[in-house]
Image (cartoon, rainbow, N blue to C red; front, side):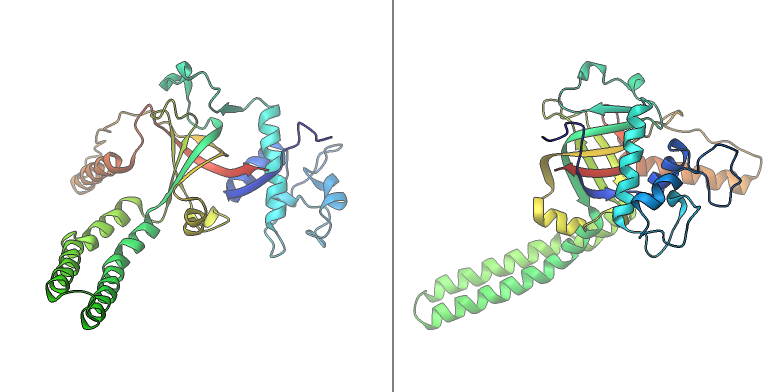
Length: 305
């Protein structure tokens, strides 16, 4: 019989450094060089010999949450993460939001900065760096496609399958498409995208399609994905409606939407600060989440098997 409390996770994304830090605090881990109080167990030493001897051979007496070794594997990361999420639940530090959530509670006061939230629902992953690369390659791809189409038209004309007028119209169509692509100004567009979003993957988690504006928005580190986002988009597309789970922390600013300058009397620094605040406002207009969308920092994304 299947244990109803058992969860088998297939990880898509894992921010291991955050998991390591939180696990050390929640699971009472102590660095390997710390002095132990009498009767106080070393965080995970009791489990080390029984469960992970092949990973940490030669590190007896240490806490596996603190090691960074070449033999450290994803299986270790996933094991520690499981303990971390379970401990969050035991300590009542985790809010779960899915399509059964009472969305009348979705107010700005309901969420607080740093709050842990586990979201189940539809996922949208947008890797703007990869999208920019595809856009930059578009003119060359269209040029190659146009060249191939012209060759095909020429062969049909020579074989008598089309008339000279049909050939002329077909060639004009190819030229028109090429000009339209060129007029789009793709280079400037991709340059702007890179400047606004940088090397991050934008993540949107929608708990319920009946409440499309009540969404969690995040920026993920490309290096924390177990597969490239290009591979994920080829497998699933940009919209993944497979009830994936994302665990993260709420980001909630406690300052005004438009921060005021804080002058220190140094005219040069004060003027630079005003410029920086102006640029920050422009960036926030382009990429910041505005309630009822809620910003959060992703720690994990996984599907339940």
